[in-house]
Length: 276
Image 1 (cartoon, rainbow, N blue to C red):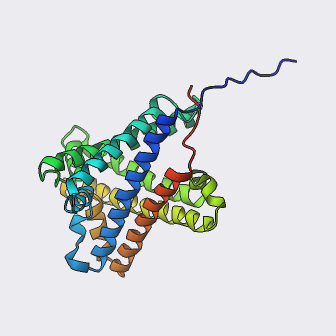
Image 2: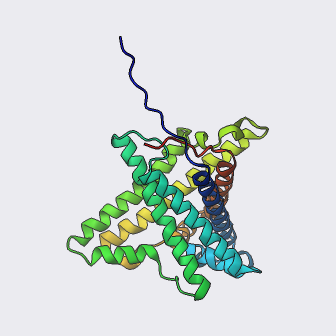
């Protein structure tokens, strides 16, 4: 009886892994900054408000630091590395995904993740030369959809995508899917703390996506793009509820945890699959 033939493939190149590590570190920095700004805005420390807790606000906060333009350029470069790494995952299949529905769905997620951070990289580059980038990207998306034929249906579909993304973050957290990214770090002293940071981080990220989905759904319902919003609008909505400041502070700390988990992933995740 003949055994099934196993097709081996070369491992991911070292330089592709380096792109991934640089990208994850940059992503971690951005989420740590976003979470910190959200926490400060929760209690209005030093005049901080939720208006500056979108991606433009985070990048402007970096630019305002000593040697800010240099730091902003480094962030733009790191984000481009992240986009390139996701591109190799999506189009080069460096994770060795099967050519089935599940595999194609994963590669599609890689593609859209890269696309999302490509937009942030472009914004960072624009901020190096001007103070542009204050327009709410979710409002712009809502307006573009609502202006099209069947625009309201398209806007509802976009809101559903945001909701599904948020729910998936909670699924990823509670099913322990994130653990594979911690690699050997989970076995080191304090490994449980590292994993807890990952779980909290993914839950916080899921909450933010759900809030953005709610805002987008409300914009679709009332056919008013102005009701959609980015993270700053989501945080403002969260802050308005009962114990809103405490909830916003908790989400802010959760986003810092997510940022820290990206550092853990950059250090311990093998970022290695097979190309097909």
